[in-house]
Image: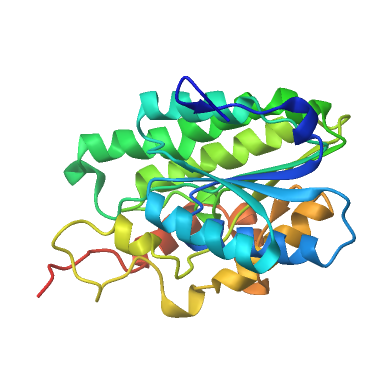
Length: 290
């Protein structure tokens, strides 16, 4: 129901639901993860109905996803359009999700922004938005939902970090640093919650064709020059399937696909001088669009 412009929940009715909250749900990993959870839960004999709370900027895309999830799987879906970089909009969203109550809860902090280009030519406003979405919104959403998750029978926090969080990446300096924050935050939170029923997993994918690159590319730059080599990409399906399985078996980190796991292992053990050499030789400069 609505109260003062926000959705409020009846605690007694919410206990009948398994609740999944996803930020950045309109596309990419968030959208695919919603389908993965819905499909998996539909094959189980669950007494509780599945309820999604989908959060993203695009209301139209969220509504289309909600209609499809309801039609295919009979899910109850709540759409929360929100620009996570906007503090006022985020406050309203946080008030809504903090009121959720369920015996089985899952939070997927998936929303993220990138910026491909040298830091010295970056736009301060874009940098600020990246900090707000990639870090501040993730922390605030987790904090808002955590008390209810601690009271639940089972609860899962899925933070979408990145292989970039293990690296200092030239021309992706802000993005990589923000994902290093997500990884470190997830590890610390997991330790704090080790003796509870709340499980924390950091998902650390490499590059994937989610549309993220188009958003990260600066205006007037060409698609010809990309920040990662083509062989390095992992499919969205592989990332989401690996992430969901990792969450359910309570893995601390998930590096989807063998190549990403091997690269992650190398990066975490290689000397800094070698990493600097490798990072300096990767495709860098984005060229003007024709």
